[in-house]
Length: 100
Image (tube, rainbow, N blue to C red; front, side, top):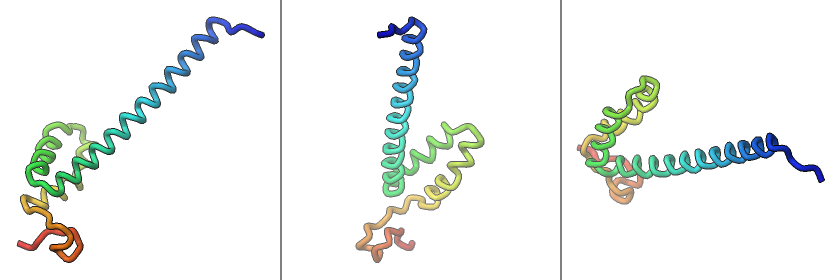
């Protein structure tokens, strides 16, 4: 049986570390996606959460490319204003807002 050199052991340990870092990034990204979806769903139904999301995005998002990516979503949230969304059974099953 051939014994591994110290360099081989280091290379294997580095490869394992890289795999663990990748797994950790995947876990974190999945968590962010789930929480982001939950937050957006809440923002679409709760005016206070909606206002907070808009305010925080305007304050925290500074890169032009990120602002451009969020523009359509923030425009959608702003257009909702303070009107609460009706349950589907009260609006013909569409989940849309009640006309003012």
